Amino acid sequence: MPHYDVVILGAGPGGYVAAVRSAQLGLSTAVIEEKYWGGVCLNVGCIPSKALLRNADLAHTFHAKADLFGISGDVHFDFGVAWDRSREVAAGHVKGIHYLMKKNKITEYDGRGSFVDDHTIEVKTSEGGTETVTFDNAIIATGSTVRLLPGVSLSENVVTYEEQILTRELPKSIVIVGAGAIGMEFAYVLSNYGVKVTIIEFLDRALPNEDAEVSKEIARQYKKYGIEILTSTKVESVTDHGDRVTVAYTGNNDGAQGSIDADKVLMSIGFAPRVEGFGLDKTGVKLTDR
Image (cartoon, rainbow, N blue to C red; front, side, top):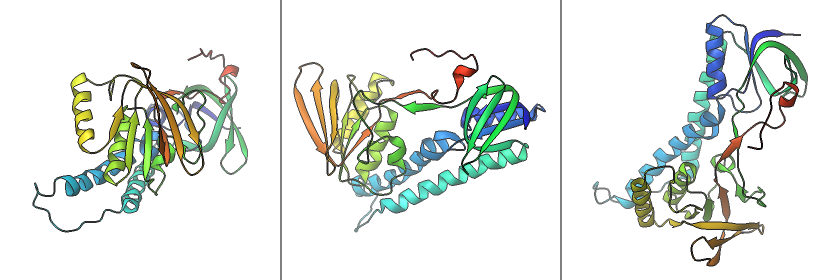
């Protein structure tokens, strides 16, 4: 049974950096990762989204600022090609993570780890087998999971950032629930490729974690782009009919009710700690309701 000074559960930016530093300090180190080496950011978050934003910026320049830059003639933008580039960029960064693991003599385990006790982890490998490792110290770096509104279930047409960023095809219309950074980024990308975008935000402004001036300016710009933003609005239900999705909502201030039909709904209301299914209760770790 392999034994390590340090075992790290999760290979995101917390996990792989901790692994590299542990190895540099002379500790025998292993990392267990089920899905995304490098974490959400490298695979389905910051890195591929910024690649898509770069393409969307170019599309926006040609569509909205052609006269300003002396551009004329018909230009066609292929989202599929932009998407392919985003995946290539992400894959290149993931290769870098594996290089760091190899360079620092860190053992990789592909699979889902679950604590058996406070010094043992069982790994259900991606090949279908099971391995057990022991350790002196463990670092829990399992990241976060997407929050959903009560009563909302994911489907082919009701998705999170993960499914959307891994989808090469564009819907004709989409409702984005949540006007945080992720929702606003997707709105910009999709709108610049011809998708009709509506954003619904429960709070009174888009990007509520930013300064009010930022919220005001981005709302003004998005309106110019044809993106509708409904603030101070509560989503009551999301119903997938198969050929379309209906989002019912109520205004927080006036109680006015309405609904929107779209091809797709993107849920983007925030994150919660990813703590379920790792056997943390067997280690003495206590979890709160949050």
